Image 1 (cartoon, rainbow, N blue to C red):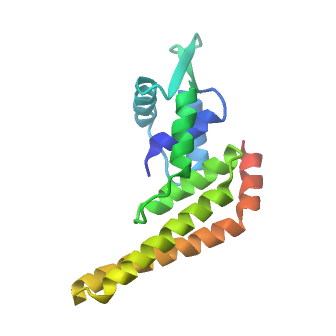
Image 2 (image 1 turned 60 degrees about the vertical axis):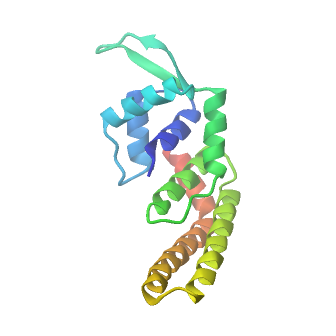
Length: 175
């Protein structure tokens, strides 16, 4: 999973500190912990790319703390990422999971996101099925593998669509 868009989505909820961002990421994306070094490297890249800004530094007991906020460009980037279907692959589940969770957290239309991804999957299945008819055996086996992965993703999309309301409640309780 590409962590930068997920971090950008978490910052889009409201200005936050790097430490708090890491804690939120670890809690929301359970099982996908992120190191502080990754957080601060991603924050530096997002500042460089104009996706976020540092709101200034605050003195505390330790080193000065910076708060980060999403820019208008960052919001456009996040919206584009949320609305662009991923190419079906083994890594898709992580990205699609992140997109779904963030869409719910940001009061975006997670159901529409899943519908767009479903349509992309079905289109790819049609392409592969057409290719499979004239392919040699080894290529047909590879295509079968891809088709089975896509079928599993589609089952996940359907199961997740059915649970969006419960997911939203759980995320609201967590925040």
